[in-house]
Image (cartoon, rainbow, N blue to C red; front, top):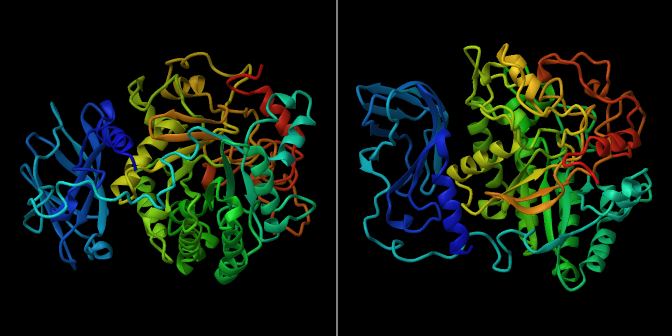
Length: 573
């Protein structure tokens, strides 16, 4: 990793404006060998009288069977509630002790917790932290201080951002479908992801191109320059435990088949030296890991299928195995799916999701070095940027967070979420150079119904609903959404911390059938794809907002594609 990019990312981690501040020592890892422990304390959100903070401890000394962290505030900050640790306060002094489930802290291991607090005046970062009586973030001057260690980011020929200076593969099958639609030639040359959503897709199923055929075509498109091929790795056992439309072919306990019949053959093809000049970007298993946070346990949003997958560990094992095997190929760049803001933007999902991703990234022989970045909003509709309201706005005596649409989420759009979540992922131990991708294939929300300014300030709901671009009934709606439009065209380096905007979901390919359709693809019928469905706890019992007459997921949906072009934002010329 270049020091230029490292310095930039470090600066980004520290300069977070009015919504947060941060204390971190050398996020690039320089000099940590002689530091007994490091503490990363970030104020994630801050308002007039309160704030939330995330804290990550990294232990560089002997392994611990329990731990206690202490600090003192210079101001009048008070911790009012916390999670993932036992927090007490006496005057300005705060003591944090482990819970039973995170008591062990290995050498080189990290643990994270969070809390909400109150304050008035200033909200300064604590100056000193001690872990079991030892001062953290202080280099004793031993080995590791003065030199820049080797880049931990994987094989030396990987670049910081695979999209930088490269063309991106145009799938000729998708391109032909798009061009066949009236006006479709305006976007038919855009790059989209190639979905490997069952074992048969590797060699080609139903007359479609297989993986080698796509890679051979990519070599042809590449010419003498650089070219990125985007693959979606999507076939976990018990896939999509919270949705039926995209259930897969492998049963919950078929982790062995996933490894030997799916991942191993994909790796063998990608490792062929014939394709070594391509930059191969993988999106690893969409929707899987977030399901284990949001759809398990005693939550109203839980499903029995997700509880099974959490108990058997096969999502964790499968993602870890995929990262390990695919990460061995020097020209592969793994990006792990990270849900979207309307899924894990809440306080009780945000930190636990990052911690779970770290667990998966260190399972089955994988390490964080096998993860080049993360992707958000894959195959979803969350608006990239809501310009007409912000999380800090107050209307009619209420915060925007109290509106029915935001519903206490910390983020109102995908860009702010992706940038904040990148920092959270770094804080739990991912490399500081990770980049984010955002799928903008269907989040444009343009057309005649796009608001031109804020809503009426009659109430916080009229204010938000009248100004929001995202016109779904609820952010939990995900199937063939009515009114959606094409979003920002694919581009590299569009914003700080973002490697690229991508069209990973090929626009015009259905999310699921609006009625039961017999098939041999393992895809069930989900009422969320039925336009008459009145909802469930996962979308707060709202109408589904789905388009009628939709085919099976992954099949071409002409009516949807035409609507996406009509409502594109930026508009199509």
